[in-house]
Picture 1: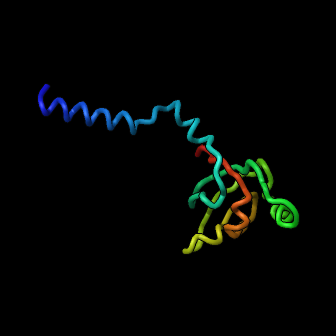
Picture 2 (picture 1 turned 90 degrees about the horizontal axis):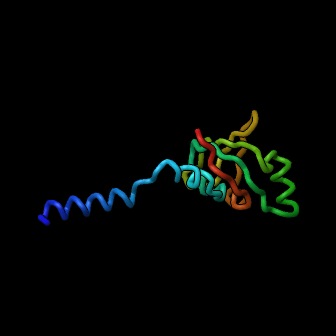
Picture 3 (picture 1 turned 30 degrees about the horizontal axis):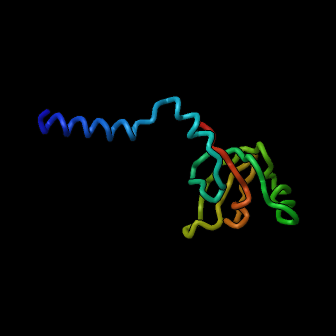
Length: 108
């Protein structure tokens, strides 16, 4: 085996490790994460709201309930707060409030 063949085989192994076939897309897209970790311009669907008591009631009163689709439209320079667009209004949340909300990424 020549040096060129070894380099080519090594390169192909690296490409194969980084390759993500189409059937992984559904698995990757279905991963749930905290709303704080969402990026600007992502479209998300709320899975759960884990806050209890007064905070939980306030979050639900703002329309953030399971099944609601939200669009992250901006974040402040220090990442707090986060601006969300849902239904027909814009809402801002502190990261301490966003920590209680689990979301999943929607396909574009």
